[in-house]
Length: 520
Image (cartoon, rainbow, N blue to C red; front, side):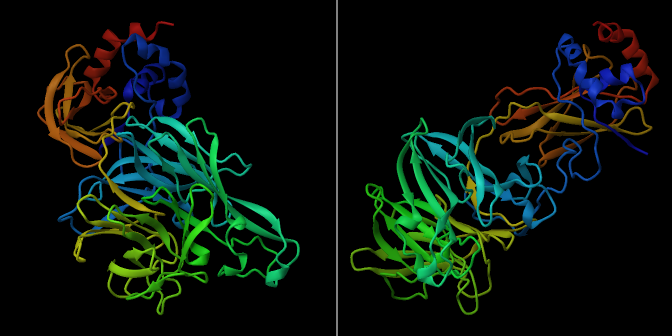
């Protein structure tokens, strides 16, 4: 029977000190990290595989959201697929994940239970690419938290929030080229709802939108209840419960610099002045000012965006359609004549329905990426309606995007050694979480660290690559992998691996390395 040993040289040190019991003494390994510096190694601390992860090299990734391809990629745009797994909808941890078209992950970051993750995407500021994601705790149909900005090394370089005692919300966050950011947040306020048949001592869940400069100073602020008619909401105001009357879920930048807002509980898109905060126009819902010439309109929508050609896209959840059905849609909008004309939509019928969340992203090649929100899947559509890619997701995702991305992790590649009774054969599993441009892995092996040499080069095969080695010299004790960058950039070595089942290896270890290890 095969044994799986997750070594790193931290495990090797522990094996020397407490042979046979290393898996129960991870703390001892941490305490003796200084020995590794003497050997010139700095591997990650060992983690014992609990058997629930699909990856030998990342046993901590248990119950990770999957992506199953149902329509294979053909005619897709470039880049990776960005999703955020939300733990309230499935049994796994909240996570942000980048997928390849095959459904294989490229990057995985998990979060503790009870953490709500929203709006994971790439944003570009003055030609520099960043990743952004929101992390918070649930307060209802919103969150209280912060948005984190990561560089190409997956290191947090900035954090944004609203300093109102509650923090910012997960629904939207925009970085601007001038160093500013646009944030949103929810907060409860006492409100007299008696004019609407509700209690005098009612509570509104209000929305605050802010633009902050690079120093986090507020340069523009907009509060929903100061501008939107409370009575136009589609939710019940006759209640003592806190009322999420507006539920703003998206901010779009218009071509003229003003803002486009999506209010789910009004079924309305509102354009506001960036200078005064005044309403410029209202589209949809009770306050609709537009005529829809060839379309039924939208309801409970998400994700408003103005395209460079002047058209608008949004994700129409369609809760109030008969029957309820969802679609990604593009409109031609004549703001002067107040006329809306449907330019295109997907799908054409009523076959899809997502009661919440969702988005549509126009890609550079003209395709559209649609995330179906509470219906856990994604669809990339070519203009005209042909499906270029479709995947079923193991969890709903608030939004789904496609972006080109170059990631260069600062973490060390990982490797795991698996062997059986044959002293000339082993299997190695290796990965480098977040590395986007790896073509293959070199494998090094030898009887000692000093005599290791390259014995194989294997093409990268998904998130974790399995490498089988045979016909090895029977005294091969040490192993290590190194990613090979597609453009030839330097990469770090993985943790060292040591074969534990051969007496010749124990003899080599005792003879060559035990004196070093005992220094302290």
